[in-house]
Image (cartoon, rainbow, N blue to C red):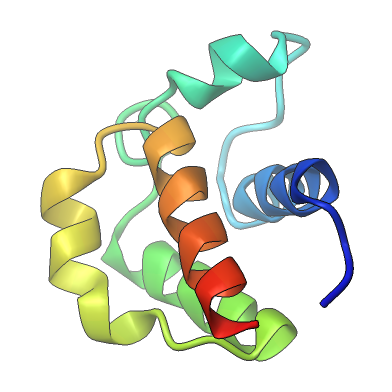
Length: 92
């Protein structure tokens, strides 16, 4: 993959909102990164799995094996995006 970090981050943020019941607000990216996947974006375990499978297929990376860690340890969108970006970049 030769996309730069910022482009990947933008794509991930857009994908997160595709699977959310909530519309993306006009907040800045920094404000959005502080939102909680479950509380603010109304994710549940099914929507998280759907998102992870979609990201696995798009970026050819394994994510679902760490699902319990994701739910327990990633409190906001910023942490989630960082985690996914790390997995994608490690897989390159």
